[in-house]
Image (cartoon, rainbow, N blue to C red; front, side, top):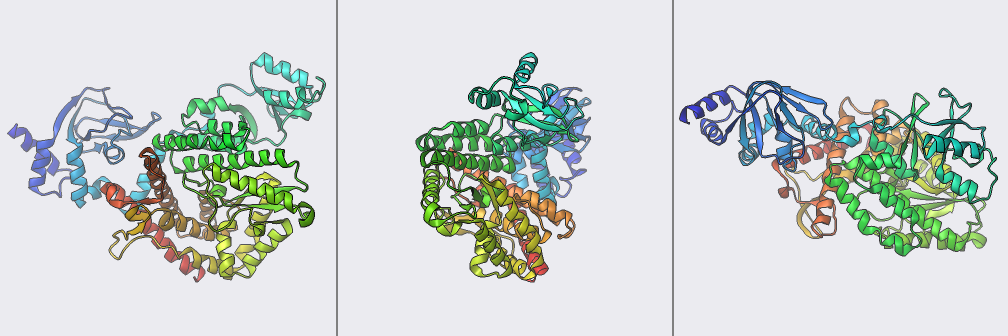
Amino acid sequence: MEDERHEIVGFLRQHAPFRELDEATLERIASAIDVRYCKAGTQIVAFGQDALFWHIVRSGVVEVFRRDGTLYNRLTEGGYFGEFGLLHRKKVRFPARAKEDTLLYLLPEPVFTELFEHHEVFADHVEIEDRTRLHKVVSRQEADNPWLSAQVESLLQREPVLLADTVTAQAAAHRMTEAGVSSLLLVADGSEAAHLTGIMTDRDLRTRLVAQGLPLDTPVAQIATREVVTIEAARPVFEAMTLMLRHNVHHLPVLRQGRPVGVLALSDIIRHESHHSLFVVSRIGRAQDVEELAALEPEVRASFVRMVGEGAGSRIVAGAMSAIGRAFKQRLLDLAEQRLGPPPVPYAFLALGSMARQEQGLLTDQDNAMILDDAFDPDRHGAYFEQLARDVSDGLARCGYPYCSGGIMATTPKWRQPLRVWRQYFQQWIEQPSPEGLLHGSIFFDLDAVHGRTAWAESIRQYVARTARQHPRFLASMARNAVQRTPPLGFFKEFVLEPDGRHTAAVNLKRRGTAPLTDLIRVHALAAGSQAINSHERLDDVIRAGILPPGRGEDLRNALAFLSDVRLRNQAEDVRAGREPGNSIEPERLSEFERKSLRDAFTVLSHAQDYLKYRYGA
């Protein structure tokens, strides 16, 4: 045993990350190491099993794989693997197999963790510092996430059933029956090369033909859905799920270079996902009154916790939660219109802030507004829309979305105005910036219509994209506002903690992290003329516009993704523990690895705020 320990020490001394450690530490490591022999082809660790050891390759060849089976790394003598699982939830994230006969040194998790947290030189080799480390963390999480790696075309079960849009409804029903499908795609002449003109489903036949008493020879184009939501075959699965949630559709045509190659059905998504967020949206759409909607709040929380627990990632979770919030608004508006009667003039109901950006967590209040047709007459129509807004706002409060403390709701008359007034609002906010206007701008420049004349919201976004970039004073004022909330880092990069509700010493990840990141990304997006709402999509436009120095855009993306992941994971832990979810976290409860990554993200934010002040003269 003594000779074996000396041999292990000699080996460790030759390889990073051990060669800089002192002799006593090497002796302690060697005493703790277990030796394992693996024949070629042997599975060493499997995805999801408990992570008990850090593995060092003494001799042989080991292949490490991603969750989807693709090769991630090939290791030889001196290589190591398993640190990601040890540092994240103590579960194996990357399966490994011996490619050749292999001898491994197995370092137990407690010894690895002690080395990582108390020996900086060891930690520096295991994971790269600062912005590179943060990028590594986020990219590893994305690489291991099947929602981000799996493409839509991988879920397609069969070729699409195409039909000319000139045939009758009866002929279309016969074709669906023969093919055994619940939907078919309409094209101009029935050929694969033709342009997609619509989609017809079983539901369309029931609700638009049979229920309306129309004859069987009704042209299929008359009952089909003509404004079709589609997705490209190479897009990730999570985008398909987000689209289906957002538009409440059960069939999503899949295109490749503009040609239909399949239809993604709700059942295909459900087979792929176990998060059940689509089920929640479906139940919201079937609810018959506010009581039924309010009863779904536990299911919303359960869906959130399940998604986080299964590693869905902040973009997927936040997109699903935003879609659920939109579904509540839409159903409450439907129920209100059933009770109050049809609206006397057209309107659009707006989602604002995080819901519009598709970045909603579990803890959120209701920010909304209403655009009314310019034919609106307060004396004749005012009472209807006031009651409509009240029904929706009260219903949202009962469903777990508290009233906005700042009154940014359609129940406030100022935020329930004709389209011409909204255009005046935005023109004044941009051309004559004031403290109050800038405060509103940080909310209302993130807007999206969830019901009614949705094109009105799009027209406002187009106006803002054209106009804001032409007003340097407005951009400078927005930039000044965006740097008011600074990251919680002291002079030596230690965390600056503050009292926050139930926490006595904590960091508010939203107020001091994700919110200021979102604010500064918004300023750059306005300068770039971007019409995007989501922060990640805005960053795409900002990077393409060349507004940021090379690499800074990806730094911001990684910082936002990491802070959002930690925030949502913390909220899920609160729910599991029976606590009300919050935005604060105590850094001392994190591992040293997570604390370093958190510090990296806040450092990126600090540097980004400095650049914002420089670029816009704030």
